[in-house]
Image (cartoon, rainbow, N blue to C red; front, side):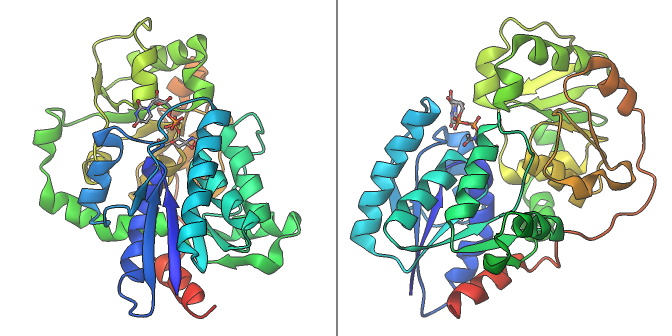
Length: 348
Ligand code: UD1
């Protein structure tokens, strides 16, 4: 059986890392990786492959940056060509990026079976490109692997129950496995001299492309009671030149996955507009403040582990003082999501 996995952006390398490792153990399966080239900076791409020991992609389309239409179109054209040549039995796509929607569309039009990993997530905000990518991908895929029961319920409401399977979250598998590896491989003091700090990330188009919102976030960070460490996405880095902020904010380049886990483990709290980091904070029991007006990961909101605050300075500062009230429920599976996905595909 031949599997072709399509990746392109940072969070997909982490998810594919879990699944491709398991496929490679199977004698009867050939696992091919196609990188669209959506993320191309060394510290946004190659470092993840090296650290997570993911084989070098057989194909890299080097699509790079561009408008959504252009980026997705170039991916579609390149992916179609590879699929015609390779004729895989299954295409695997991950999450909600332009690489996800391009991969699922190209494969479904060629009648190649598509499995969507991290299916059934909704923010109910159609202004987010990710929401359009998720809805489209779920509706054209053959098998949907949902990370939570909430995701299964959302898929049922959209008439997709028959194709849906609860796998648990591959990112939970990954954190369980790599949190100790991170501590073995890196020392906190080599990444930052800070000991007590908040960790923040900002990269969502809805926050970065509105100067007032971006300024609000940096004003709020400037008024927090601890230093704020921000490994900054290149998109945001280009846009902060005219933004004012205090020197409690320490901006650094994007860090690797293992470095991020270590920074997270040692932080006091997390401020982010990333979906993945909200969950990783939850898995590592760090309180999170979500810099958006909604979240797909509603499980993390229980017992004040996560607050949705948007870009309101006062609300960010108010919620930063809260502490979670109780223990967490286990909503993200048993840490064996990857195995469930691989077993399903193997016996299909
Ligand atoms: C993408 C995903 C988002 C995901 C995020 C993880 C879409 C629509 N969005 O957002 O869901 O959470 O990845 O990081 O697919 N850039 C660089 N170097 C890089 C990559 C990007 O400089 O290696 C800059 C470019 O100027 C580019 C901008 O960042 O135009 C945005 O990159 P893009 O891939 O379009 O989206 P992300 O913001 O990374």
